[in-house]
Length: 332
Ligand code: NAD
Ligand code: UFG
Picture (cartoon, rainbow, N blue to C red):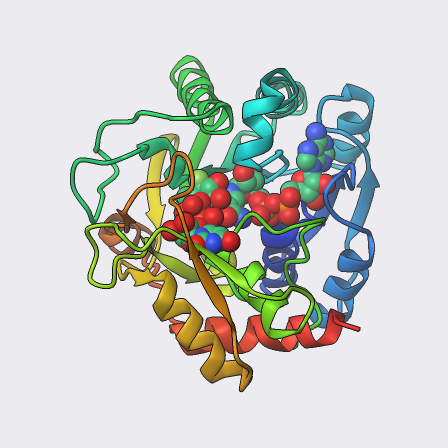
């Protein structure tokens, strides 16, 4: 297939592009590089041994989108979005404009170019604080911050579009906590400034770029008192996108899938696993709970297994080992 990948230079997008190229798809990326660099795309092509087409542009810019669609596109994977929860609380309008505005503009361009197949990056954030874990796709949706709201609204817009246009097919993928890197260590996650997320923070402490990890709370109702999440390897996530594309291309309508392993690990278990993988100490200090955090969030991924045939294959040691290989390569 000819596939347009929005946000393809980013963390999850770059790994997905490798898998798509290796599966024989033709790939066009549109990215405005607001949270990435073109170096990732050079490395994607090096890893896959195949070229891709890159349009540097914004998904809200119709001219840039028209250039991306020129030559024909069969399906779109839409990663492009701003994703920092804290930042979204301070700048909600920027998030609404970029994420929701970008998605509307993309759907308009898809309609104009008769591209009817969409795979969308959603997030477990749409469950807010669920009543039960592991959480299933039919759990109530309730968001707790503007970033989460953009994901929920985008899901709803895409659903409405599918209802109105019977030829359109969409798959909404709700990711839990993507971590790790390509096993080569050539592409990975390198957040600007202080990392918001646990794994890149731990990796930077192990590499000596930061002194210690702050553990946000050890008084949660979990086995060791620290927060529990469902971490999944970014390469497993990338493969899920290739499978979701095949699924969407074969039907119409809108489907939603959780993507996680179904197993939770605590912050302290993550620290111990990273120490094993890196052979380095990860010093930490316990601090108070982070505002808006929940005790435990894990996926019930059985729908993705049953309908997409997808299961996560990489374990925690692989997630930490690959993240460490990447981190070593980018640390001075
Ligand atoms: P990322 O920031 O590394 O990648 C996003 C890419 O989109 C970046 O390259 C950025 O430059 C680009 N972009 C942003 N706005 C754009 C715009 N208007 N036009 C063109 N390009 C634009 O983030 P990621 O971790 O790879 O996340 C990808 C998607 O997955 C996002 O939609 C994110 O919300 C979602 N998601 C991520 C996580 C996670 O923990 N990483 C969890 C759940 C969902
Ligand atoms: N944590 C720390 N110290 C840190 C960072 C995180 O102790 O420096 C803890 C958190 O309190 C939490 C766990 O590590 O218990 C995981 O935190 P992350 O920030 O890595 O992940 P979250 O589950 O809080 O949030 C992430 C994304 C959200 C997304 C959600 C579900 O940041 O955007 O996963 O996909 F909505």
